[in-house]
Structures are given as structure tokens and as C-alpha cells.
Amino acid sequence: MARYVMAIDSARCMNCKACVIACQQRNEVPYDISRNWVRETPDPASPCGTSFQPGACMHCDDPSCVRACPTHATWKARNGAVEIDRGRCIGCGSCIDACPYHARFRHPVTGTADKCDYCHGSTPGMTPACVSVCPVHCRVFGDADDPSSEVTMVLAGHKPVHLVPQGSGAKPTLTYLDATVPDTLPAGPVRSMPIDTMRPMAKGLTWVGGLVLAALTGTFVRQLLWPSEKEDQELADEELVRAKKAAEDRGEHRTEEGGRQA
Image (cartoon, rainbow, N blue to C red; front, side, top):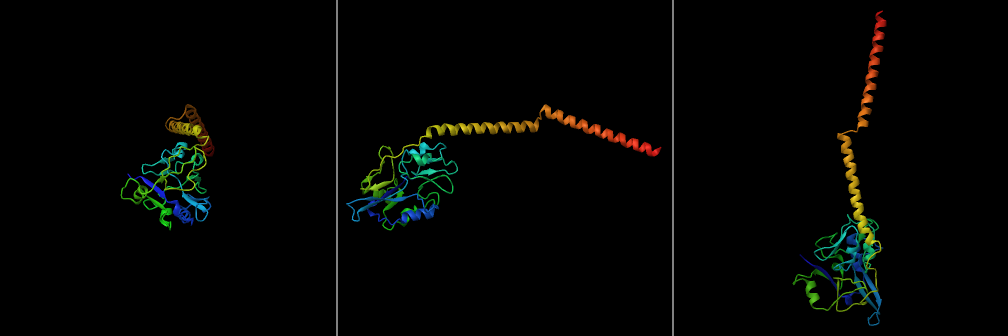
């Protein structure tokens, strides 16, 4: 099984935003929001006075967003990516609040959580759009367990740097090469407050819904196969009324025939 990792040489980035636009186009993300970004930080040591830091979902090990999700709609896949099952996502926003990198957002069309998935959802098996279009090749992507892959060789030749928000305990797999500015981030949320109550509530509602559905199904089957005594009596009364009416009609018919014969 592959273990996908993205490595970024932020010193090469020239802030052209090609990665941002390519991601929006391939993954049908509205242009006012984005799955990835280029962070701009004042830096006197930089020739232009500003350092540029490309970023996206860090595809963390032991991700806080996974722990936060009450419906298990997001998970850490065996291939290293953090995925979202939009069919199970209820759009509660717990994972969005729990991400210390602010890498998640609620999609305005689907209403579900959205983020970088290495373009697996839109073009599985292809190189992520941000990697393909970068004119200075500052992003490298591949299987870190494959000794012959480019990302493995790049990581072996550079010092790995991981950007960890203060106090978050995050374990990002997205790796910067040698150095990056900023090299740390302010403390961010590690979970959203409703998470601990939402998970048991969601499970409880699932069980209650299942019991209600089972009860309704049982009632329908019972009524279909074994009507109640009240319904039996009502049917019998209706049948008796029809019989009396038919008898009266026959009696009136005989009377009319007798009158005509006389």
C-alpha cells in the first residue's frame, strides 16, 4: 500500500497562485474559497521582503478532524490521505472547527465539509493539480514508501520541517524542505465544544430512528395480516347494513310486482 506525502520547497515559491487556481478548477471549488493557499509573511531576509509559504491540508497522522466527526464521515486512509465521505457528512462543522490549520470549509453548494484530498475525488490516480501546474516545481508528491519515487529522494536530500500550530499536538505529514517562514503558527482549536455530546447523540438518534422504523413496519404488517377486532366489527356492521338494504330493496321490488299483477 502506497503512503502518499507532499513535500514543499517554499523557498522556490514566487506567489503566482497557479496552484490555487488549478485546484479550484479541477475540484470545482468556487473562486472565493480554496482548498490550498499561499501564505505571505513579511521577511527582511527575503529578496522581496516577503516569504511565500504554499500550504493545504496537512493530512496529519492522528488528525483532530477525524476525532471530531460525530458520524465518522472523515478518516485517515491507509494510503496516508485524510478523506471525507460526503454521503455521511451532516455539515455540522465540527471537523472544520477542530482543524488547527483552518484547512477545511463548508462547501457552499453541497453543504458538506471540503478540503484537499490530493485530487483523489476528482481525478483519482493523477498527480494533484497544484503539483502539475507549479512553474518552479516547488511541490513534490508521491509514495514515500517507494525508494524510487521523487518525493522519497527529495525528502532524503533535505531536512524535513513540519509546521505545527502551538499547543495543537498536530502530526502533519505535509513536509517543508530545509526551512519555511513562518516555522510555527499561533495556537488554534484542537476540537469544537459540541463534539463530545454530538457523537453519543448521533448514535442515540440512529438507534431511536431504527426502533421507530421497526415499530412502524411491525404495525403495518400486523394491520395488513391481522386486522384489529374493532376493524373486524366495523366490517361486519357494514356488511350487515348492506344485507339489510339489499333485503329491503328485494321486498320493495316484490311489492311493486304484486301491484302490477293485481
